[in-house]
Image (cartoon, rainbow, N blue to C red; front, side, top):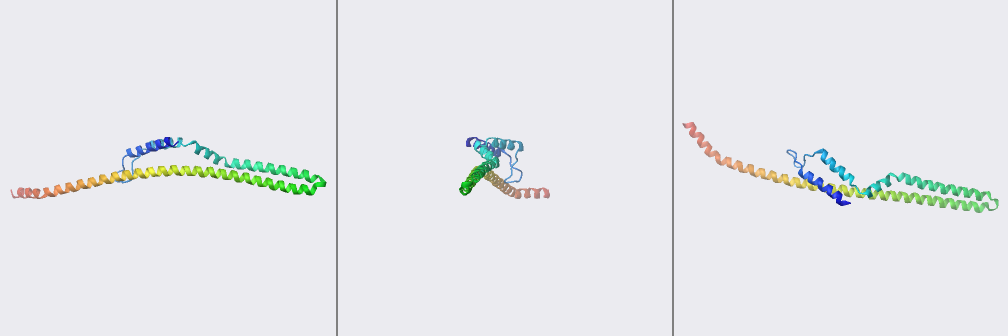
Amino acid sequence: MSSKIEQIIEEIEEYIDGCKPQTLSKTNIIVNKEEIEELLRELRMKTPEEIKRYQKVLANRDAILADAQAKADAIIKEANIHTSELINEHEIMQQAYIQANEIMAAAESEAQQRLDAATIEANNFRMQAMRYTDDMLGNLQKLIHQTMDHHTAKYETMMTSLKDFSDILANNRSELAPALNESELKDLEE
């Protein structure tokens, strides 16, 4: 699972390492939009089946809840029918009323339990998908920060080298200045 994703992340890192830095910028690089989009498309295509399953469950959450509600309604309807049958029997009318209330309470309780269970399951899938997505985004963010730090260090090293080189050139020119001034004075005297 993660080996395919890690491979694509390594490809993105190698691609970023190979990009040219933008002129006069410590952190910006020039990126070929098509190449980076292709790498991101590959990353999306390698998304584990678990995430796709979680997304499907989340998409079907309403259907799950509707199914649970339909089952609850059927149980309540059955309880109502049973209650009507008991009430029709005159001798046991009082007992039928008590039983009907118990059946309806049990049906409502079971329906609520099913709705609660379906909601908890859908929320658990959603949280797992969000955690996984957050982990993946965190890894990608860490990779980007590492790449930025790496390139910033290279840029700073290059700027230090150029500064040192510029200082050497300035020293060399200052050493040449007295000799040049003498030569110009002799030319003027002649």
